Image (cartoon, rainbow, N blue to C red; front, side, top):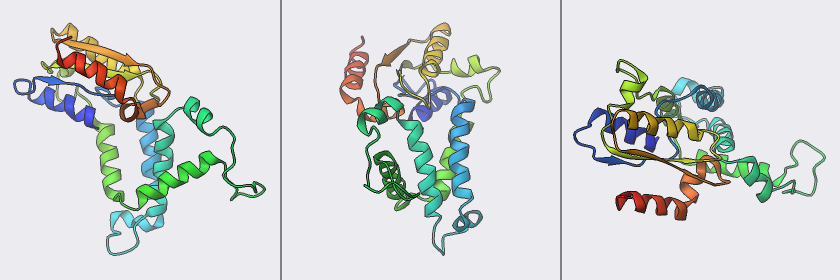
Length: 216
């Protein structure tokens, strides 16, 4: 959402925003990412504890948040990383019933429970829906015209293994901006970490951001 906000602000306030560096973010939400987020919201809303959002005087829908986080986390990483990190290793010796777990299952459940301890379910739902509705073309005469409202010097950064927001979605924004006369470039970083590369590939990101800020 941070990258989406940067582009939205640059489009809404072209005379104020001088430069932006969106990481792993699209100019508009595409169907695949909307589908992923729909599954996450459904997990929360099907938890009986959600109570149509009126849960603040009772137990929050922690099971729904846990499942939403698990679905989300799968989209943030890659098969290659999971295979190298976990393989088919077991978290428990006994794997003869439904409660036996592989290490990857243990890992996903841990992150699901962790988020459920501090993140508000309704906030999760509305932030998720806001990302679905993100579209630089909204209110403009066309998608292209909406993107080209951005006049800021722009560096779009994509990660080649990003499942959630594939690289073409960052590249198309840079291409449209250049066609509109803006100073924009696209940089693609090789990573096994998928969408979460924007958090993990610190050295590679620092290098291209430094070059951009130095005028390169």
